[in-house]
Image (cartoon, rainbow, N blue to C red; front, side, top):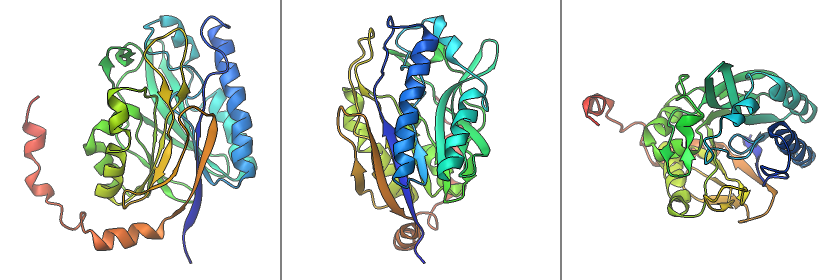
Length: 290
């Protein structure tokens, strides 16, 4: 019997921008907007759904404004508890990328994973934190410290890699070695240099590791910051590197694809990258600087 899983990605823009409400009002509006989209995904039979990076807020990292610390919350916490009701209602696994507060002054860029019965399975904290023009993430996020967990959900074994992580093949490999069948990469990336890489790196990870990937990006321009336009084009890619479904450039939407997990065995039996690995020759990597 084929193991086919209906998966979905939500890409959307902000309903309220900075200056149009308090940070809490902006956050509440974004959550409410997502609840409607989650309902639509559930009614379409989506079994695993992933939201975009820090889904409940703007991508506030161009600002270096400490007021956005107030939008962070514990994980599990209020938002995961709210979404767990939707997970249970629709028997849907939900990947919830959110701004996490551990204690005063300690914050992570995190993704929680809720199983189809609404239970909290755990979280991944973004490992690689950029600090480049417009993406001042070290101001907001501490580097992740939970390594590369894989979550055994009702429908599939899934891993999470967040945005800038996708530029690093090492973690993508570890997720495969840890048993991931689907890896989700919730992102916030704008037109420019990274757009060329958007459909190169992640299909390459899927091919090199023989798993599916779900790649999510925001849409629109977030005021008042002028880092560029979030260009959408969220997509699913299979272990052969083929795009299965893709979103538009500027539209709020749910991208849905049926993933045939039996393809993983088929592809890995043809391309024996895991058999032919030579980890005993890779020790030098950990000794080389920088």
